[in-house]
Image (cartoon, rainbow, N blue to C red; front, side, top):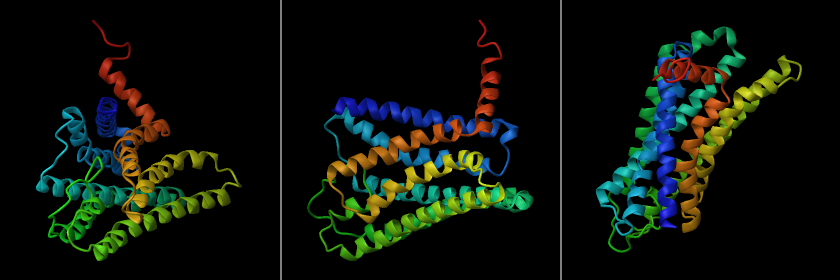
Length: 292
């Protein structure tokens, strides 16, 4: 099983790196994609890659050595901090992308005015700032906990609920803080985003006499990514102490499968991205393939 998981995570992590960098390179190099819609899309892969890089390399290392499944306390705290930074930032970017689609579909005449370059930069800056504040808010509660007994987490990675479980004091109040800060926020954001996409579809349905096919194709990629990102988050933080096997399954979904699927979802369901990738491929290898 260790050998299988080692190759599983290694292949998936390489796919995550190549997929994310390919999306960023495509958006940067193709002038047709220099529009407000693609500015958050170019930053989302970086957060996805950062989220995976905080956990998956350590997991691969542990599976490879098969006997060094330990981490120092400072490194554990660093991993926890950056998981929260990347997760909080990605949440803000998903909100920004939903707002972008709402503006483009419901207020098309004002789209370029509202989604100006300044607004796009503000969204990206807000993602990093909110993610950092979110992480610091929870970090100050955990850094001073007393750890004097158990030191086995029983998972592939380290996060607030699992580390708090090892503390030598009653953490009931801290559990409530974690659930309120991460669980309820994740759940509220998820339902708000789904509601906003339903509102967009209803608006289109009223304007186009019931034809939702084209709009649904446009929004389906966004809705899929929202579901994939928020479902494990809500499960982990609304029920912060799942069984060991379930926690490991959620880790695989949240840090390996979802980041790998996101590039495929955005590229395969987006005509402009597919055409931009073809143009990038032709510029890279030439119109007739690689010459001798």
